[in-house]
Amino acid sequence: MIEYIDFTSQQIAGVEQARRLFHGRGHAYPGLAHLNIDWLSPVALITLYEEATHEWLMVQAEWLMAKLPDCRSVQVQFRCRPMAPMEVLRGESIDQLTVEAAGLSFQLQLGRTQNSGLFLDMSNGWQWLREQAQNKRVLNLFSYTCAFSVAAIAGGAKHVVNVDISKAALSRGRDNHRLNHHDTGKVTFQGIDIFKSFSRLKKLGPYDLLVCDPPRFQKGSVEIKRDYKKIIRRIPELVMPNGLVMLCLNAPDLDEGFLLDTVAQECPECRYVEQIAPPPVFVEAQPGRGLKVLIFVYGPF
Image (tube, rainbow, N blue to C red; front, side, top):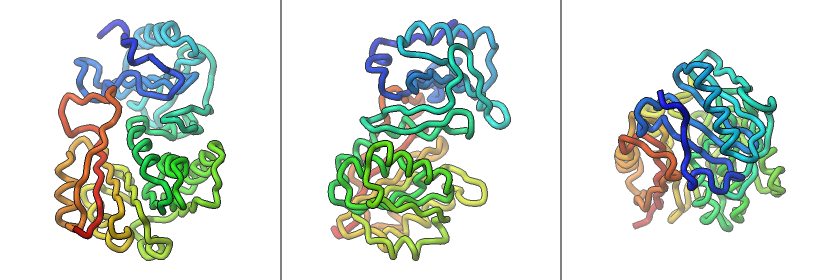
């Protein structure tokens, strides 16, 4: 195994921003597909999807401490183990922190759940939404901790409706808005099952912009290949004519063609506009396996 993961000066420039430092999961680095490294200032977080020796991990921890001047903690999350436990390798035990990403602030919790509360591959998507949101009514489906909502309000959105089945995630989303000094009167939080609540979402609309970022699989709720079409066919009920639609997909076994074909079948009134790529560090050996973010305009033609 490689002794330590080296970084170019470009990767560590401006490390005050939360970012992915090394993306092994894209299979572009032989022998390292089990490994990601994130900078969540002041924490360097190693994520393992296969076991590694403690000795090798300590080499990485020493290297990260030396490479990142503001690093106060190096931690590892064992996604290869039940419950994805955390371990502090070097420095302080830090489990709650506030980070900046794409010019916005977010609260993160390490070790309480499998995910920290922020998906760094989506940062270009947040920036796109921020640039498009002025005076728009936004529907944010599968909002999780409301990063898209924070970006939209920062961009001058008139109102955002956040929808997620997890009320705990929405509560953290509300905290993220407060952290950014937003008027939460412009934000609605709906802790509901999307597939059972289209009538309620329709009453809260119509919307100028729809964001949909579903999980690939959520037990008892979402199976993306089966369910994405149920959302796409509802676009005419939810979105204003000439409204924007952002459809996101993070499923290695489904590429852009899945979204394009599903839209063509279920909502042919939508016209494809562009694809938003993740940051360059999220390199993939096989195109189409990483995050897909496609932008459409909903009719008329």
